[in-house]
Amino acid sequence: MANTAIALIDCNSFYCSCERVFRPELQQVPLVVLSNNDGCVIARSADAKPFVEMGAPFHQVRGLLKRHGIVPFSSNYALYGDMSERVMTVIESMVPAVEVYSIDEAFADLTGVQGDLEHLGRLIRARVLKYTGIPTGVGIATTKTLAKLANHSAKKWQKQTGGVVDLRDPERRDKVLKALPVSAVWGVGRRMTAHLNAQGIQTAWQLAQADAWTLRKQFSVVIEKTARELRGVACLSLEEAAPPKQEICSSRMFGKRLQDIGPIREAVATYTATACEKLRSQHSVCRQIRVGVRTGMHNPDEAKYAKGITMQLPWATDDTRMITQYALTALQQAYRVGYSYSKAEVMLLDLCQRNEISGDLFAPQQSVESTKVMAVLDEINAKWGRGTLRPGRVELQPEWRMLREMLSQSYTTRLDQLWTVGCR
Image (cartoon, rainbow, N blue to C red; front, side, top):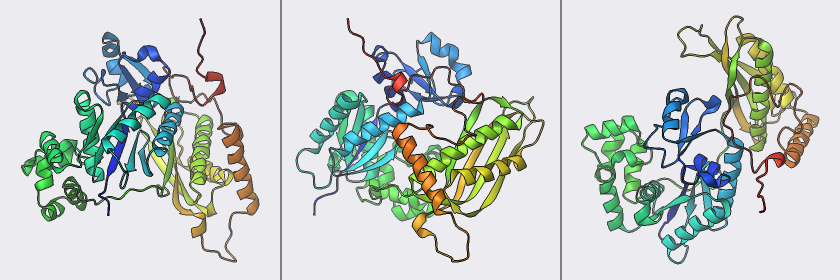
């Protein structure tokens, strides 16, 4: 049986790299990308990291960014999502099996692949860069945790490694484990790092050498599996098909404080429509919905209020119209006059797959006509663009939309914003 080989392909500073693809003049300019409503820094290019911390509020670092020539961008999720699909498509064309782990990284199963896997890693990097313009790092190992660590090493020592590190060799693996702190290990956060440091575990190698059963008893089964994976014992399998989500949430901060219920109704209807699209995309139905609203929680001079209402639906459904009706009823119960609201959220709960619903001759259920209407809605929007056909309550350019003053164009998803190349 062939030895297990797993690669992790991770995009470098993905959000910032997406912005640079269509703005070549920014290749050598430090960038940051901001969260919803241009709130905090959520992504930094490598050359911006020495000057600004992750999570720093934009209003506090605006002057700092200007002094260091760092260009800020509002988050452009339409662009990032489309570029992610392109990157994953390239990777899938070059390896036997892929688990898309997040928007900017994927595990690839290279078990049984003939030839030099490090060379294959370099080919993947080159092709992704050529076809999408996105730089990547590739880590190869015998387990997913080691592949993550190999990828971290590829980025940390990019000049020496060329962006690809293969840790299948035990000697090389132990050398890297001894050189990296335990905080660099996948799944070991700040609190766990402190706990492990208190036990004398400072490096990744020391965690790998620790007794697995003791780790399980003192911490958790997750840390036990992590230690085993660092030794080369596979405990985490590749998941080619992501399991359906058990909850679906659609939520955004408003671009400004809202007091009247009218625009909040529009927001809740819009969020519900988005959540229902996600629900149908995974072939699920829901039986409960929760709608929440809240004011800003950080301004000491602002009255604070938060409330969520959960409602049971009459039957398991994916019909946007029915779910929106119940969502607006829940909003009416949660809303209180006299507050300035900053956010609303819609959660679809108690999800199940269509084929998991037990038939009952007397129980009400979604009509065939409703199912057909939703299928036509999704088909039209898939063909002509999101929002082409939508519920009447959903506004495309509402007054409460997110603040995104530094938003780049949707170069790949909108015809009126396509990238143009001039001839001289």
